[in-house]
Amino acid sequence: MSDQYLTDDEQIEALKGWLATNGPGMLIAVALGAAVVFGYRFYESHANGRALAAAQLFDQMTNSLAKHDRVGAEHIAGDLTEHFAGSPYTDQAELTLARLAIDDGRLAAAETELRHVADSTKDSDLAAIAKVRLARVLIAEGKPDQALATLAGAHPAQFSALYDEARGDALVAKKDRGGAIAAYQQALKASDPRGGDSPLLTLKIADLGAVPALPGVAAAAR
Image (cartoon, rainbow, N blue to C red; front, top):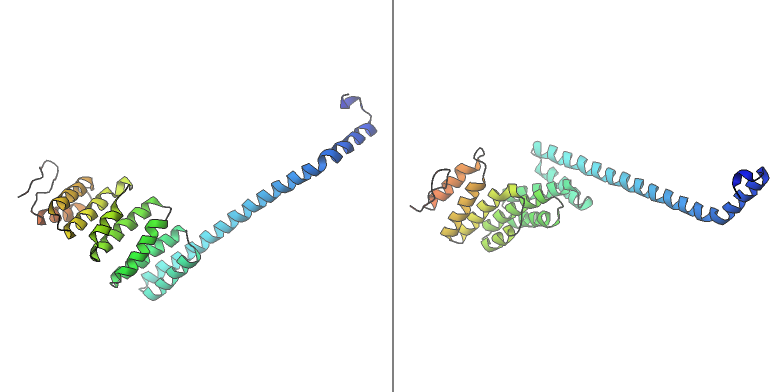
């Protein structure tokens, strides 16, 4: 029978019966929905709070560096890596720690920082930068084979020139003249002629007794 033919009392009794049957499940569903919404908002608020705190620490670190306070900068970077693992600000802090270690001649410490960024960052561009820098540190440590292994595999296309140049440096360290020339020529081909990399690559190729493969010039050994 349609509800429109029921009296007011009959409609009330029907509603009570429906609530008795379906009310508990409905209340549970509403409670679960509210819990999901609250949980998501709590997570979002927590994540935003962590990101803001990491950003503030990173800003403090860069300010310390601007004031030539290396000790303070290293301390803040350490706080970032300890308390905000996985944050892009932590990745940048580790790259900074690596650079400071290189400046101090602490190549093993720089290798550790760079390897961690290369292996753990979620940013493919940062991973590529870390790998190139790690390869250069490994070359300086007398580990050209490890440098070449670090540079193996796929990488973002915009870093091709840097990768090829680092390969060339590793091959020079291995006394592989032909391989180094080929890598440098490839780097020169991939580099932006408006940038500052081409003159250095040209010198590296010339130092190996070859003619740089500039546009309109054939590459050849002297």
